[in-house]
Image 1: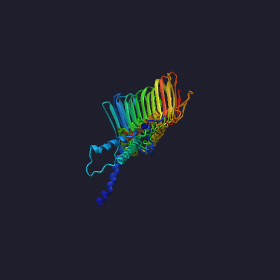
Image 2 (image 1 turned 90 degrees about the horizontal axis):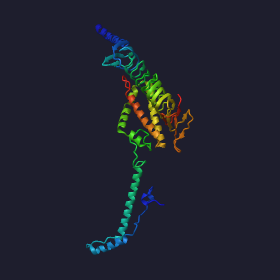
Image 3 (image 1 turned 90 degrees about the vertical axis):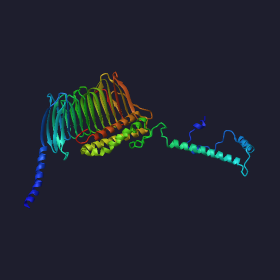
Length: 300
Length: 199
């Protein structure tokens, strides 16, 4: 009888010890280094926490992770020029998070997916694809293509004026780009876009209710196309060779810094347009809104 | 100068004549031929002669009534079944988004875009899974995404309302199509945002 009682009392104690051991195993740090090709592909995925990636001159990928909560493990594999780093949460819950610090060959192609984890990238010269749901994305960009996308997180990218193809989109997060160059396509529903480009070849932006603030210089013959439903467009764009501009709004106001006067679209219809040429008219600027106000200036 | 009779538009049944007289009186010729009938074909024994004059009047009234009924049916079809923009205009689809049917001046471009069966199928599919996807998002992110979806809905309503005032406005048409595309993009991004995969 006493023996049975002792067993009954000890079972919960044993289960408690076992679960405490599992919890202890899921917390702590993780270190791993694997060989990698100088221009290989590095894929990283993490649900929560953070992802910090930096480029270096070594031909290897180094992973350091600080794990909290129900993180089961970190899988790192490298095969045929492709290195994969994946934080795996336990099935018991999704409350774990990992802070990843990853160093990759600087010319690697980088592909990062996160849910609520923030992403930070610096010193990577290859193509970057950065996706987050609610996490923020901060990245330094170079002369390679960048595709960055969030749902509610913010996008903040900083370049050095080098030409690249940049594709930035968010649903409700703000989009900020400093010293971009080349071809830019940016879109948001309700976030604010603050964009500065040093030498843009083509710019195409679209928003629903978010405002656009553009400040920069267009290359000779560049095209600039921005539209919004109710967001305001504030464009300060200089250009080598000038540009022909066509600005139209259904119910918003149009203003400019060169004393051109907008005209009504029709005698009995709402809407106004502003058309003309600055300089030689080598480039083309098209701005349009339904109810958002538009400001255009040919000086950054 | 009066319009030709067959090109005049009929707005009310009262505008139609009660009876239409033939352009020339055909009766003398008809009467002469009927009068000659008994000589050519003797009547059968016991048969009663036809009430010739009264039957002709009834026939004329029947013909006029039939014509009147035809015109009335034509007017009803023209007003009730054909779209307001004329026979070439596309009617708003039954499954179009709320408010779209009110867009009486919808352009062919809008109608074609929204009534594309593939668009409708994908849109409906994404909307079905939206609540589950939104529930899986962290609460602050969910609130932001819902605010953005509300902004898209309002943008569509505002554009449709503005197009109602100026149906041929190319700028509004373009922005409306863009907004429908943006809505699909947002729904697709939210759909792809399941935990562990990102977007």
